[in-house]
Length: 269
Image (tube, rainbow, N blue to C red; front, side, top):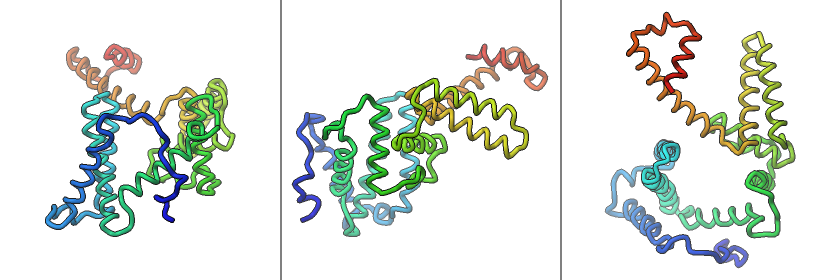
């Protein structure tokens, strides 16, 4: 009996998400099969999982930009581009006789049901934070992994990687349980940074401050990666206004005292 014949695997009854119920997704799968099929597109025929990797990364970053810009129309379009990458990879695997898009979807359904025992089982949770902690614990149990870095991609941005490592540790019972506890840990790391002297010590202490900052962000329900991305964008916009202000007033930044530069930078909000 195959996994698809397994009577224990089923989608629980629930509301239909839209009036079309996924019909257009099936059209997308058919179009992709046509592009990769006989008489299809030469470029699509030549692609491999490896050659498409960079496109997957690019589309993911474009989705993030649309989210940061709170542009729902652009988000819809960018999600379509990202979905294309998923369907493309699935079609290539189907062409190789390995698996297809149904296998991808079925594996995801199984995972979602298994990792949401508070919805599809009898587990009780107190909020979203506990859901994430349970997710990491269940994931680790599934894969029989016991290291907090096991199977976390090395290419993941450092702040996102730190948050994931911390969530996994929390799944095993280790985390700051209060906002004040996380803040106190951050203050301790900042104090150690202030007293660091050797360059290698400074680098280590900066890392500790960043890691502790991620812990505070998690405790406050904030994604550190998204928060920093927004701050960087805001700084860039503000810096442009700041330099325009200096130009209007004929001020040379190199000759401007630091305190005055900070004051004008605040003025450029």
